Length: 380
Image (cartoon, rainbow, N blue to C red; front, side):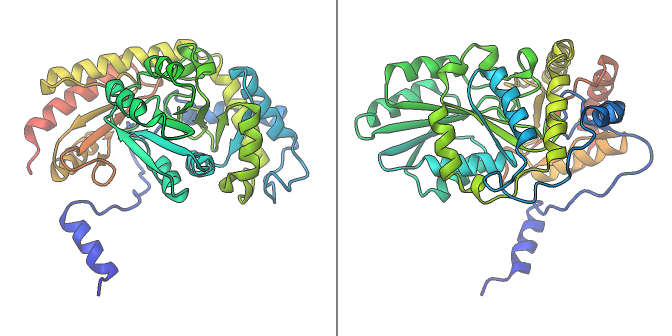
């Protein structure tokens, strides 16, 4: 009979046993692990007084789901801000996980086939599983493969829903959204679902993401974004048609059966989005240091890196090597954690560096020098 202890032992022997990181005290570290792409989270103290003046009476709990709560004002204000930003109806969710699981499972009605990028997030996969949906996968960012599947399946199903991310969380590369939108126009029964979790706030004018930057918002049926990364808050949203918004309010179980986000949290999100709208200069700086860091890593390793964002991986191909490099970097004051199975496939073990607009070029050069040194000197 299987034992939990046996599973834990197996994970440990494979260098895959995880634990919650300890609280780190002492000398400040260069933190390259968080999704605070715009550096807002570390600046929160600057705006506490302004926030309290703007929202002096905001509550700490909703005490009910959105469908039962009596006070809807701050939720409506945040959804209204998003609707102005995207020119489409918006609906709030408690997290990106809640959004993807709830929306995708709800979209699975008879006659639906999902076609997903091979590297979509676990939450989207769980939404497909929860909805017991039929699905096909296409090779990562491979438009030719996607088109072959659509051509083969579009006559056999009432609707095909293509799911991708705009910025992928492990490799930092960007989906070919323009090509996907063009392909969608050739097939009337194709819908396009784009998860912009790692783009919202960090990319595009006012931080509206990749689809907005490319002028494709109206070509995408559902855009999902999160507030827990560049927006320095908590929660998520979907922008879609009025019909689908109403449908999700009535069918997305993660929306219907979850206590709504605390009003104070929602107010803070609105406050942060207003700050982000004015940070185009910081977004340009983030783009520049990301290109600088990516180029530096390529020079060190001799390997090309496909990232086109602030997420930049250094593949080690081995869990033990990833852990050793991470430990060595931490000793030098650089926090960069290893990514192992099942988050990435075997051989895809890596250090994932997540940059932030708060970093200077001087810090980037220092990190690169340390990586070069430790790669030569780590013992496996």
